[in-house]
Length: 347
Image 1 (spheres, rainbow, N blue to C red):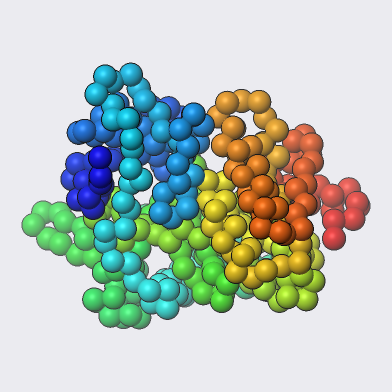
Image 2: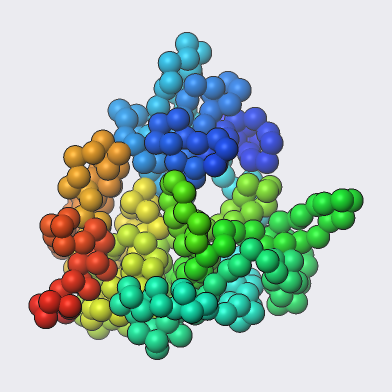
């Protein structure tokens, strides 16, 4: 069975349906990331959190598992979903558009205090350009992007979508309301915006600003490189890999080494590609401590950690996989902050 773009496209066509709050993943019950089969694929779920015996990787390098829900007509072979049938603006345009948005927004006192509590200094907060995204004013933010890059390019910026109501239509910026965390590439350009939602129910609290569910451009899936990280690994030859954009930023402020953040453990192949590109002398894998958890839902963390380490070693890199007791913090940022508060050396 082969897959066409139309079969795997989004926006109301047949193939795969994105998990959402109204249509949760039957396997992990999350409202994001996973895909649920429709039509010929009914009864099949592509889950990115719970492992099965059938492991696959899509064209973005995202690891997922195929689960059959008992339907007799479940196909024996599942093709990787096609996620890129809509043109996405090049990185230079996205960087310009997102910088314009950040310039138009401010950081709320609540979000600022939260960032301070996580270990970021006021200077690090200023340089990181964190902002607060409210539910209101989205049409004006779309106009900000239009003024920055033009209407044609704006339509291809992830997050931009058409809104229609009462016979009227206009451009708007999608995304949850919450703390905005810029995601940067090796050159320091902002390639995507992640939001830590103020109102959290189930599933991931961090989501990308994207138009995918509205027939528009998908957000970039990339490994976040904090500002200044490149200079650190060029000087020391050591690269640390952890999970999450904000975690990587916090660790960079608490630690003297270069630390990059995968958007999730399923993206370990993207981290591998970055290591192969920059060729550091040593790689330190420091994923969340919950890889030690025996809960079956944590199996993807353990599997991704093993795959990343094995792949790096097989390519000849000097690899150190570190761990710490889960009781001392789930993430590397929690652990480093604990070391600092207790006066133990973290650098």
